[in-house]
Amino acid sequence: DVSVAMTGVEAAGGGLDGGAHSASISRGQVGVLHGKKTFLLQDELGQVREAHSIAPGLDYPGVGPEHAWLHESGRASYVAVTDAEAVEALQLLSRIEGVIPALESAHAVAHAVPAAAQLGKDGVVVVSLSGRGDKDMESVAEYLGVNLRG
Image (cartoon, rainbow, N blue to C red; front, side, top):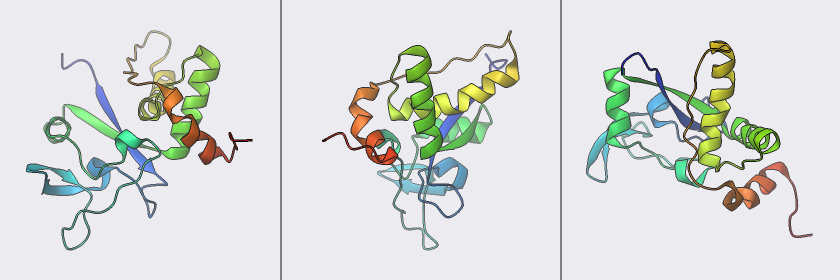
């Protein structure tokens, strides 16, 4: 249904401008990796650059061909969320709803909360929550400087 806006959320890591990130659509170029043509993080010589995200599932220098097509066709728009924003969203959803999202999904939540506020009370936002956030607690604690080991 083309009347439904689709937004993908990439990992901006430490920031898109100079920070390590995994935002291959927002900051990448077309290239080939693992036999597929897609958007990749590359250096000036076309070599694949190292990616970074606090979310293990987003720590990759490219995107699948479906996302590349959705972006190129204009069917979906893409935004980038930093590690800090994702952790804040994880904490927010955990506190308000009692649901600990995986760090990958927390990136989507970080974008969805302000997007929903702009739509108003009659707007509808659907966020896919995949995975369990309990697997990410050590990473989140380390990021926040919390010692879980005592």
